[in-house]
Length: 127
Picture 1 (tube, one colour):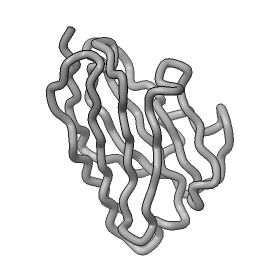
Picture 2: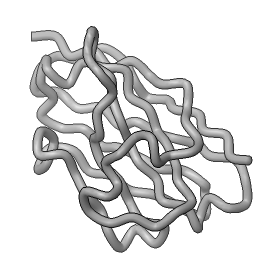
Picture 3: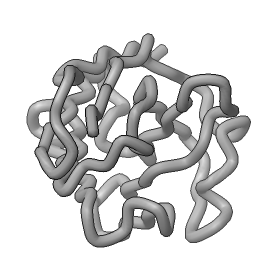
C-alpha cells in the first residue's frame, strides 16, 4: 500500500514558477516509478512527466519539456516537479502517481498503468 500527498499548488502569474511536492508513505517508494499527471478544466487527465526509481531516467510531455523538471529524493520519500515559465494553459489539477511495473518512454504515459494516486493539487496560472 502506498499513500501519496501532493502540495505546493497555488495561483501564479504567467512566467512565474512553482514547485510541487509529492510525499509518499510506504517502504517501497524507492523501487517504484513515479509520475506527474494533470487535468485541465473540462479536459481529460494527461501525462506530464515520469521518473525512474533511481532517477536515472526521466520523460516529459512535449508541452512541458524545457520548462518543467521532475526529481525525487528517495531518502525523504518525496518527488518534486519544478515548474518554470508557467503559462495559462498549464492551469490544471496536478496529480502524482506511482506504478510498480517497469516502463520506459511512451510506455509510461498511460495513466491506467499507475496503481496509486494522490488527491491532486490545483495550479492556476493567470495571464
